[in-house]
Length: 297
Image (cartoon, rainbow, N blue to C red):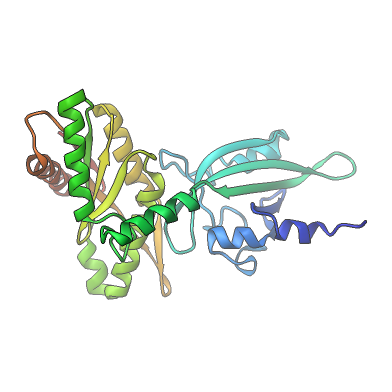
């Protein structure tokens, strides 16, 4: 039985694309279109580093020009696997698991590479959680993140663990920089797209047992469990850098977005109000110091 490889590749659950030696994309399957938002017509013939996927690692470092796994596989002929974040066409970041293999001709010369990638999020558990939150009116309708009514009892529960068992937790108070500028210059539609892009990036990058939600307006709050101050700072900076490395496509423009972050650990003498207030004041210090930064206190 003769098999059509392109038909098979178009129907597998992985995103797949092939490149030549110069990293020009020569094939792009249907799953790649679904995961990334880019159609085959939009990417075929372009280099993979031409502002398409813009892979970054967990520290927000761009890989397309300096440490591209696909370029390294073409160079040393070795397959690779890694966990990365790609840039969706709509502006947010998506966590993916990547597998890259070299492609050879009949003379065993490398002719390019193939990248297989899957969305690392669990759609089933995510949708189940969204349904539960919707039923309890605890989900922000615009960003699909938990809202303030969900975050407040979550913080209270963490205080209970702190008092009973000594489990330390922290808060990340995050605010979109110059958000009023997006609304004033481009309109509320652009502002909504910015809010959603930031929300999707934060949700994708948070640890599975932590929670991030929309506190109000352009403010987001992360409740980070079982953490010490160094790790809290690392997580906060990772979220900040991933937002910084993203951008939102609106009409014919790319809107660059950054956030300012305040990070603090809860103490047994705190309550919800004092803890949130301290994280909020630290975030404002980040604003005063130039924005797109994190302040720990």
